[in-house]
Image (tube, rainbow, N blue to C red; front, top):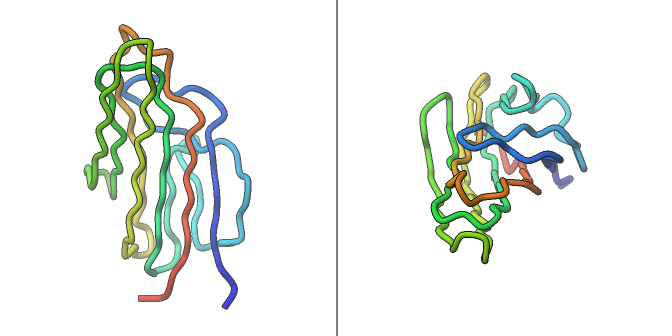
Length: 133
């Protein structure tokens, strides 16, 4: 069977307390299964199915930071990474198998200690369609 997947990434830093904007597309053969909306920070699902959703972020030298997956406007999963100010890096990763219905949507929210962080960058989002529901 042909794999259906998309890979998006953000080319700019994401502000503290903001949703990641998936402004660049590296690979996309999901066709009309998904669409990016709301300044590219929302991925809407147009086809019911089981999807594997993987998001990775790169957080620069922050003592308290997290990556949160929101589903239909509510927090669904959180990955926390604490590092030392200015000396180390966190790379939170969220990977989930999710049953998505038509018109459901996901967003990824990032928060970090802005007093010592250079930002959150090099984020990537991979979405794979596994099977129909």
